[in-house]
Length: 233
Image (cartoon, rainbow, N blue to C red):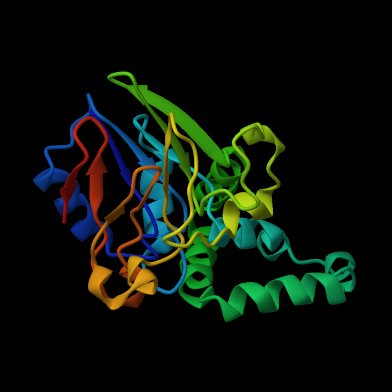
C-alpha cells in the first residue's frame, strides 16, 4: 500500500508512529511525505532523522526544507573566514527562515551537530537528495505528488519545466483545475484556509487533493492511502 502525508511541522515523533501503526503501515508499505516536516513544532529534527533511516519513506521537498538548505552554512565549522562570508544575502535567508518558525528545528539540529555530527551531515544529504515531485500509478489511476501544487499550471507543460518556487509556494484555490487524467496531491496550504468547514479535514476535488490538515496550527496530521483514498487521523 502507498500512503501520503504532509506538513508534520515538528509533530511529536511518537504520535506520528502511533498514526502509522493505527493505519496498519508496515515495512511492506511505502510512505511519501510531501514536505514541511520541520519548523514550528519541537520535533522536526527527530522526524527528519527517523525518515532518513527508513527505506520505505520518501520525502518530497517542502518550502521549509528548502529554507533550511538555503541556510546550510549554519552547520559548517565556524572559522573567521566563514564568519566574514556571512554576508547580507545569507543573513536575509536566515531571517526569512526564522520568521517561518525555524527556531525549534535549529535547536534540534544544533544538538545533532554537537553530539552526532554524522547524523547532521546525513540529514543535510537526505534533504539535498529529496525530489520536488514524484508520480505514481495505482490501479490505472495517476497521482502527482508535490508539496504545494502547480503554480502557473498548463496541462501541456511538463512537470520538469516548473521552477522550484512554483512547486514549493503554490496556493491553489477551490476553483483550481489541474489534469483530466491525473490527481495532484499536495499540502502546504492548510485546508482550513479554504474555509472553516474544512478545518482538520482533507479536501478532495476531481483534479486535486489537499492533505495539509493543519498540524502547524494545532490540528493533527493525517495519512491518505492512495489505493482507496481512505483517510486515517
